[in-house]
Amino acid sequence: MANRYYLDEHVASHTASDTWVQSVRIRRIDGAAEIGDIEAISTRTDQVAIHATNWQEAEFDYFVTGDAGGESELVVSFRPEDTYRWIRKQLRVIIR
Image (tube, rainbow, N blue to C red):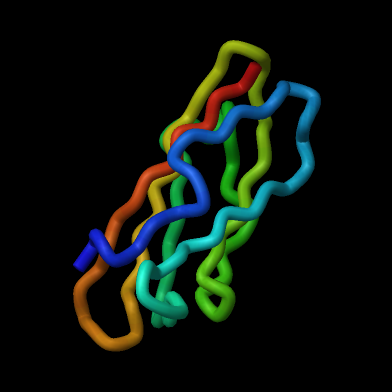
């Protein structure tokens, strides 16, 4: 089931001065990603922080909080509307 879904990208790279809120959308291969619930965490909140999650739009937002040379993994877990199972995807964020 997890193979039907993907994120906009697997690796994101930002400069340390790029503190704008970045959005990542969950996509489904064969149609709209109808999400019932979503959670996102950062493995290193001192480098990259989660700003918000939006299950209606199937997306989450994050921003850079660390210095150049830092990185973090963003782990998003979501439950499609048509199942009770949760799917997990990861996004690596590198700070240049």
